[in-house]
Amino acid sequence: MTQSKAPAKRADAQRSIAAILDAATESLSRNPDASVSEIAKVAGVGRVTLYGHFPSRADLVDAAFAHAIEDGHDALEAVDLSGDPRLALARLIESSWQLVDRFRSLLLAAQSVLPPGRIRALHEEPMQRVQHLIERGQAEGVFRSDLPTSWLVGTMHSVMHNAADEINAGRLATDEAADCITATVLAAFTPPGHRIPALSDL
Image 1 (cartoon, helix red, strand yellow):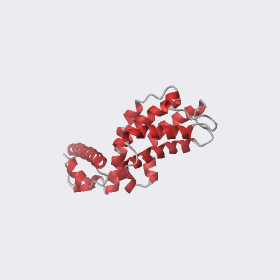
Image 2 (spheres, rainbow, N blue to C red):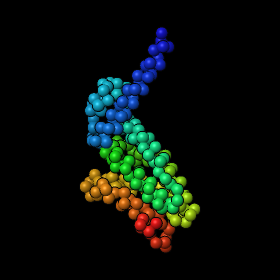
Image 3 (cartoon, rainbow, N blue to C red):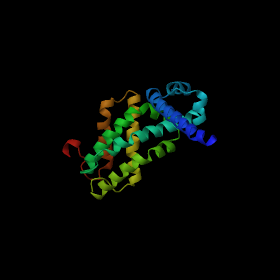
Image 4 (cartoon, rainbow, N blue to C red):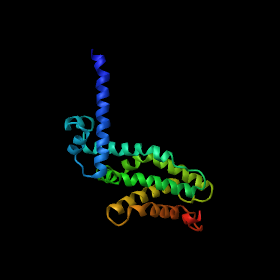
């Protein structure tokens, strides 16, 4: 009898967790200060159930942020990274920015409760995609190789998140962000002594 109930209990728990994560992602993407009570209500569960899966709001924000990044994986996997690495970089920035913009309020929530190292760790898989593209650009001589690849990856990560902060502060329009990010990152990645290309020149 006990054995037959265990799988059902596990399935119920998984459904609760999925509902909570979806609710947290949705709620925090609208309002970075959304409370645990609000999220529980959207998920259709009680606070006790929510805290049973996520002991603190920080744990919930961490899981929701990881959930959002995982959801964006398929979109980034579909980006064409072939051809000129600089054009591939522009395409990757465009797609990545759409995700960052969609979840920028969630990013604010994460930044308020998670240490920078944890936020960086959650971006590890997307950043590996950037690293491989940078390494190909370095091999082809269009990206600088005098700085560590990890530094260049971090530069793009920082510029992308700074764009979200600028929009939240009202200093940058959403539809201008991708071009600003691309221009800044291309300038940072261009080898010393080489002309910084405009996208229209590529």
